[in-house]
Image (cartoon, rainbow, N blue to C red; front, side, top):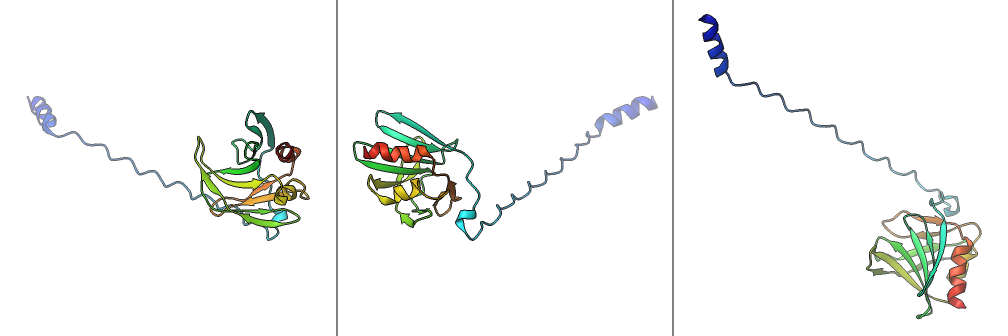
Amino acid sequence: MVAGIALAVAGCVPRAVPPAPAPAPPPPAPTPPPPLAADWQDWPWTPGGWRYTRDATGSRASFGQPVRLELRCDRAARALLLSRPGGAPAPFTIRTSATTRTVATQPVAGTIPAATARFAVDDRLLDAMAFTRGRFTVEQPGAAPLVLPPWAEFARVIEDCRG
């Protein structure tokens, strides 16, 4: 009987709620990239390589996978379009061993929005990029600079558009 009363009383006591799990610690803050050297020619290369393709609208050279920069020939307009995915309409600053120039961009909608600079086919900045000694950069406020090799694929698109 005493055991029966003890069981009855035990059944009236609410079950203990397990304690809530401790909150997960916050993820560690990402370490910022190391500061860039003062001389742009000492900046690290952007990973990737150039790839040349051609279609009905003209030729193009794309850098990286996913694409980080693209030069496309618009044969109908006799223009070259330099596009960087992201869509921010901030200007590009382009550095080569021979020159530095800032160019305006326009946002271009598409599957992947991009900021795009338009060049006439005879713009000498394109030659400076294609024939620079070792590397050229494309810089844009709010984005990491691209440090790119002047491979033949890039120059070939320029020549395709001029021919």
